[in-house]
Structure formats: C-alpha cells, structure tokens
Image (cartoon, rainbow, N blue to C red; front, side, top):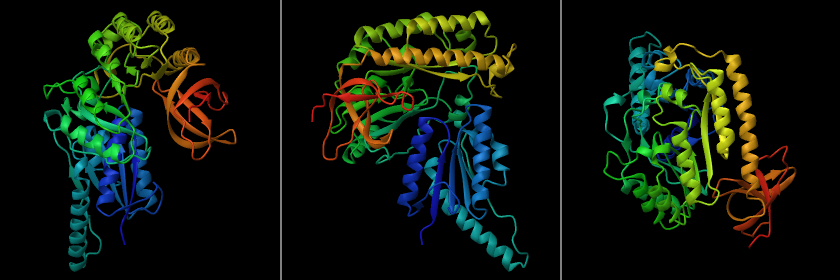
Length: 456
C-alpha cells in the first residue's frame, strides 16, 4: 500500500510553485497525495519567514501536523528553517529539515529517514531497550554562498489554464525591513532552456497562461548574461502558450525600450505589479528602496504612455519606523494622485535580524491600524475607478473555472489586465471575446464583472 502525503504551503508564489513541485516529486515516487488532515503518513510544510508572525505560523503548522498523526514523518522546509536553524533542528515535532535549495532532495531525504529509523528501531529492540531516540534528517546549505539554482519543475497545475513558473531565486537588494536575502541567498537564475522545456510541457498539458515569477524577478539573467526581456520573448514563441504575465517587478526595470518591446508581443498581459512600499521618498530612503516616489511615478507614466489603460498594482507598508504623520500624508497624497489598480497594504512587522528592527521611533500598532484602514479604503476607491474604465469595453477573457455565484452557475476567468469576469455557465459553449457590462453581485463579489455580447 502506498504511503499518504499531505502538503501545506505558507508564503509567496515562489513557495507555492516549490510546494507544487514537491507534490509532483512525491506522486512520481508512488505517494498518494491527500488533504492536510489527520491520517497522512508524511506531512510536508513549506515554511515562510518574511515576518515574525510568519515564523510563528510556520511553527504552529508544524506542531499541528505532529498532533494530527504522532507517528507520521513531519518535513519542515523553506525560509523559516533556513533562518532559524537551531530552533528547527531541535524541535521535537520535526523529523526532516530541508532548507532552501534542498527541496529537490525530498524523496532522498524520506528514504534515508525511513532507512535510518528502521535501523535505529531494530538496534533498540535487539538491545532490549525498547524505543530509543530516533534519528532526524537535516540538510541545509550555506544559502548566502551558493551560485546553484535549485532544479525544480512542474508538468501541470491544479488551476489547469494558468501556471506560475519560478525562473529566479535570491535577492541582492537588502531592504532594511526584509529577511529574505538571508533566507534565499544571492540572485540565481534558471537557464532559459530549462524554462522553455517546462513551458512546453505545461502547454502540452493544457496550460494556456504562464506567470513568470521569482524572489527578485527584475534581476533575472544578470548571472547568465541575458535579460528578463530575452526570457519573455523566448516564452512568447512557445506554441500553446497564449498569455504571459509577470510577477512583482522593481520600478527601475521599466524603461521606454522595455515597455515598447513588451507592447509588441501579442501574448503579453499589460498587468504590472511594481513594488512601491511608500509614497514618501524619505521613508523609501530609510527602507533602502533605491528610488524616489517621483521616479516610481515616472515609470508608471511610461507604462501608461505605451499601453492603453494598463493594470498597475503595488504593495505599500504603513507604519515603517520613523514614519511621521507628515510622511504618511505624503503617501496618501501620492496614492490619491497616481491611482493604481490595486494596492496591497501591509502594516510594518518588526523582523528580528533586519536593520529596521533596531531603528528608533517604532510606530505603535494602533497607529499602524488607523493608517492601514485609511489606505485600504483609498485603494478600494482607486480599484473601482480603474474597473469602471473597462465597463462597456470589448475584452478577451480566459475562463478558468466553473463556480456558483449568488446561487447561479458561472464560468469565471480574467482579462489580460487581471479583472475578474463571469458569464452564466452553458456547457459546450466557449466564450472568448466579451464586453464588460457591470459589476455582478457587488456585495459578495466586488471584483467580478458580468459579461454580455459574447462571441461564441
């Protein structure tokens, strides 16, 4: 009987990709994949360490797995175990520790663990001592001194039509609030040949859209002598791939040449996630973000001059150490004027091991909450204004799933700008070019437009 394995992912899209790759490694090795619930023989938790809260959630999930089946093998991998070496290796809830760049060794680690546990149990039994201290398996490399890009891949995705493809790892930026360079190491890029092989396999298995992602995607290729634009052009030529979307970008990558080159590619989706973090240049300087608010706005202007109503989304941190009321108001004014599609708001979380954690003038949580609420409300207003620009427009939608909304069955998918759209389900009919005609079930589904004038 095959062993049962359950996986749980914490953190970013890169982690999600790696979790999917490990799931497929387990399937290929004969494991049955089951829900993350009691009854599994193996629990794999891909941990996150972006904040202290993420560390705590990682520990909680590992201990939950142990409680669900005390006899199971609990595997801890990812950023938390990479940055918290001793706590992870000394945690009785964890049997196997695999740091970053070691996830590809999951099956080898399990086989080694089972073999050593069987030998240890036999030795204890032969000696008449009963159960003894069973072995653990720990494999971590010095992530800050490796140039190896970890070889992981997927052949399909549960989303069927869209797949995230990890093409880069590591970061050289060292923003003052961020632990990730210490957890992921320096910039390392996946070869274009390897990326193209995976894209071809995904397309053959029904995937129509790929999202290129990485820890610091903008730096793709600096170690290979190529650029992100080179990679996008190569993926664009893969037969069967109809859309290409990008993960988070640094503003500096956006130049006239970059934008115009992308606009020449019919498969490219004009959806740009440019990481902002603050609309105040003084705050950005303390964050070590290496651009000003004015420079960020100039990059947005380039995109808007080249593309017709591109979707530009961003992240903003509120309550960064030293953020005065005047600095916060600068961010409010900046976001009010630049009118981005979506703004993801995060309250600054003190992360031990970063420079920002030791900075003076830490902001009280209550103040962070007030500022966060204000920016969330502003972001919702900007989002609605952006979506209204598309009302009445003919757009292309790639439908991904059939779901129930307000008691009725709908096909749901996304435009190239990542506006969520739905049409009443009708089996046997394929919808592609549609017209956005209004928000559907606004109270329940604020991001869904209903459609009319379908081309069938």
